[in-house]
Length: 142
Image 1 (cartoon, rainbow, N blue to C red):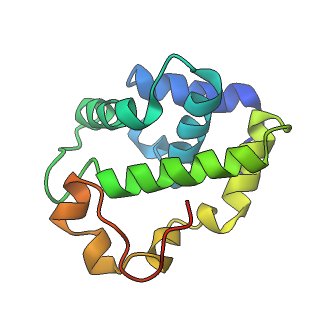
Image 2 (cartoon, rainbow, N blue to C red):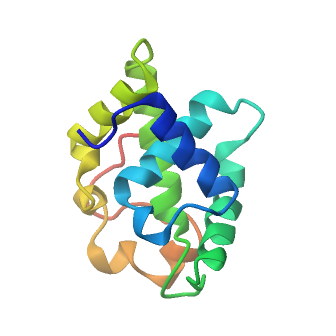
Image 3 (cartoon, rainbow, N blue to C red):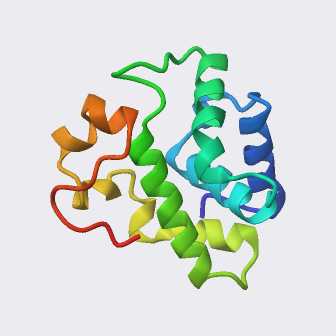
């Protein structure tokens, strides 16, 4: 399992917000850990609205440019947040660590999970990076 404690997940979320997470630690699993931590531990944050700014600021702090070809990606972020919310709704009685590990053990844990719904050209288009773009392969279930 990728995570060993609730504290580890909280540390990922906090270090995203304060931009101290090492760039090498900003993995697919860390993206979901930060999202789940924010969704469950920070009721003061409108995660769908504020996550784009958190990620853009983090990217800038770690030397990643937010452009039409790199950095922040709106469709991936919003799709992932929708999936995380739905997953949490069905797994609400476990620890944060258990929920993160269960999510990562699910199909969503595969870094290419969104390609079941979006073709690669559509998902990685400039339009999808800038704004939500509906999937073109299959209806998104979240």
